[in-house]
Length: 307
Image 1 (spheres, helix red, strand yellow):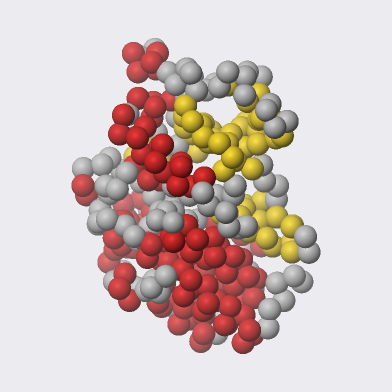
Image 2: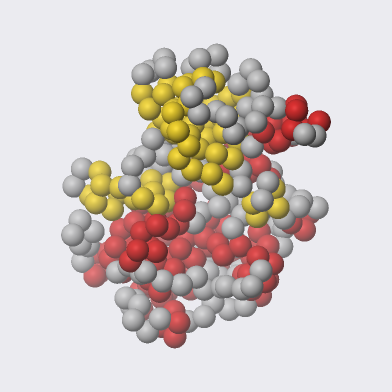
């Protein structure tokens, strides 16, 4: 075992343990990604089950990352939109692990649902992404850019009478791990096995290593909309780099050519064109404007979201 591995505790044996001076009892592992693991845990002070995201141990050794973690986690904890996952707590355990405690969600990710259904109707896609745009709009107003919107980070569950209620996950995580810099600014493309962003949903400015802003999330929402309606991502390739280069330089394939069966009309084609403009100045100016475009189109076609 290396000196790096010795500096912070391993995560392999957390199940059954308590963390942060007994505040969290780890029940089971429920997910894992390049940035860390997510456990179901009991928050003892509140006697409730939570989702406890624990960042990879090596990340806690980076002083700049620690500073970003404190700043970004504080910002994310202020998000109150009903379609944003609620952050209850965050911090660093006495033995050095960085954690974020969040509400424990049911349902399935949009990625899982898309694999089952292949593609969605226009009405359903607008209903889901209208909610997501609302969550993103609140975050943008508070200065938080998601930077890694994708179907895996959108959870769908039945809430009240709505079987397609969306929750957006992982606000701020990409910035905590990677900061402002992009690949061309000297940052490695990989971190603990994860790509900086997700190539299939990355904006051209992310590929170029430019500073991102709220319009980066607008682009990613356009990619998700395209995928929900066609069942395919607009850009694919043999390697992450080839996908990134396509994002930066190639025009989006017309969705009707890619999937003649896609449930699209001229209104949604206009939305796609604006979201997926290479020049961010040509995109929707805000997530609020995009949400209004979704809502207007829903009115035009009739919203049967609850069906």
